[in-house]
Length: 130
Image 1: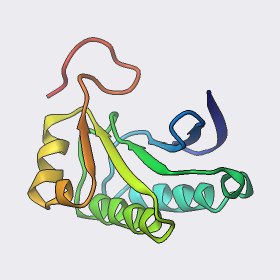
Image 2: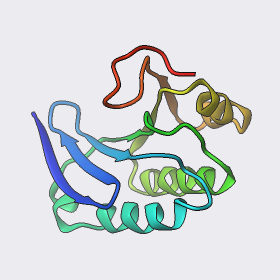
Image 3: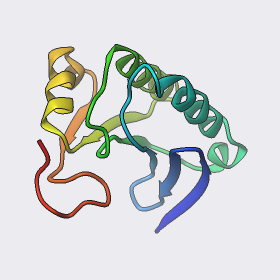
Image 4: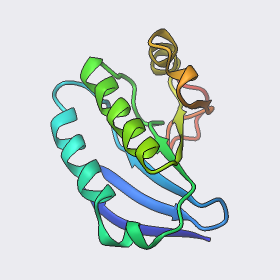
């Protein structure tokens, strides 16, 4: 069963009871103009009381709608990875854009977390994105 949790701005939090995975979906690009707001919203949700009640085993960071991740975006991802590790949770990152996937590979994130390349961005079923 997949349960919706609170939403703040362009960040949606969910929980999959079957897998014990906290879903963290970020809408749009992770770049210098969007990261401050995203960071505020992500960590406000991760500090939410309902989240502490869950028996989480993993975090799935959904970046399928991101067409670009810059250095500040990578810093946000690292902060989420650190948050997960402090709680002994694994982290998987879902990506749909080849450029974003290559950025993750370029900085070695595949050695720190599981990268899941999916066929299309969230909500888009038109085919592979470039």
